[in-house]
Length: 153
Image (cartoon, rainbow, N blue to C red; front, side):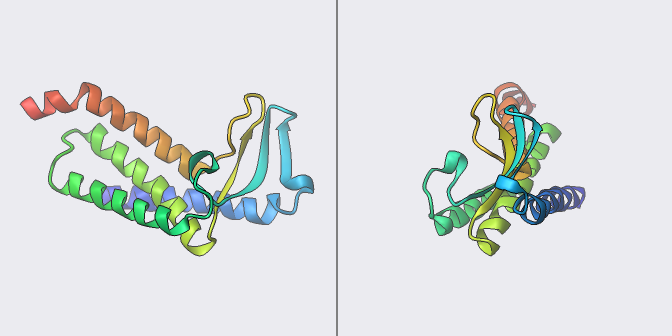
């Protein structure tokens, strides 16, 4: 139950930030607000693809892929395949981000991105992307350093 509440809070945070981006950033001159000029901007972008805008306009492919990933997470957690709290929470964090972007794809037909690191020319991203990446890194750590030890116990 705690995990479900956490995922709902992650999705809510993502959607609130995206709502602000749609209402405030879209109205800003050039759809951007520089926080540190030419380094970090908040920029309204409609991403119709996946990470780095690959596979543009393949909305239903991403919807189906996301649903499959969410099902795999539920199965892995319910069957006890992920044996540590870190492993489970890393998947909950991925799920929170995945649901946030899934809602965008279903209801907007694009994902709202807004964090724009211009200094390193990094693709514009959003809160849900942060959750997916952080959760993915934590899950990789779990697989590399905890999973085998947990299975042996």
